[in-house]
Image 1 (cartoon, rainbow, N blue to C red):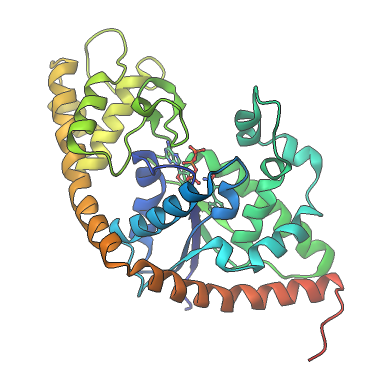
Image 2 (cartoon, rainbow, N blue to C red):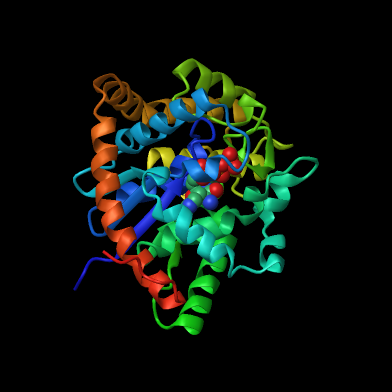
Length: 331
Ligand code: ATP
Ligand code: LTN
């Protein structure tokens, strides 16, 4: 049987966080051996909010290098920049014309990111149609993402179904692949908000490239709930539950094991151990990252990835345009 196709993307809109790693990248790495994988740096998505050109360039290369540092093998998975494959922008437009305003108005990511701002780019609004294009171009079966992307995946499925209904069977309907534990790592300063790389408070997230001392400082200052028990109870103890999730994901233990170990102990001892667990989990990734950046090999990896991705994407785009009635260009 043919391998299932897996695709996902991460925005180069800031420094990648432990949330990106636990919610998404860890699964990219786990899926690469048994599946036909495409992982991209979604730079066209990042510009839906203003980006400074030099920062965008640096963060794009950094995210690609982090993919490899986290354990993605370019021989197994195609790693590429979204903007290197023009078919994304083109299918994005075609699908935008089929997306209803009402659907986009319901997207919570748009509501969150536009709230309180008076100049919001139209790209932020139509962003989910571009994400649908990213996924559908590759006939992806599985899309590993964190919990916050569920709604965008639902829209992608609806658009694929709508297209197939109007123009004939063209797209595969993708399934989200969301981890059971760690699908929504919370902010260190507010256990009810998602840890976000674009937060103005750097103390609210752990960046994958934070130094051991920064990690220790951020965890010691992380907000904790009232009381002193280490209990997993998301309703009543969101902050501690989040720290326990991070502990479990970085140590390979279950939440039950973490709770048993710290039964009867206070926050101080727990946080101290948690910092060391996170430092140790990130150490190999950080070392590998430094090697990859200094070798410059990422450019070669991205070139090969874009070639493989373009081959697949162009075939789908041609089929889509033909199905919709575009006049083919004569050779
Ligand atoms: P921002 O926080 O700046 O809005 P983001 O990190 O949510 O950006 P991406 O970089 O595109 O956006 O996210 C990449 C992947 O990481 C997505 O699959 C997303 O669901 C996942 N992810 C992001 N934040 C978290 C989190 N706090 N917990 C779990 N998964 C997350
Ligand atoms: N919308 C996602 C990033 C993203 C993506 C994708 C994820 C863009 N295209 C395709 C999976 C598949 C986000 O904001 N995290």
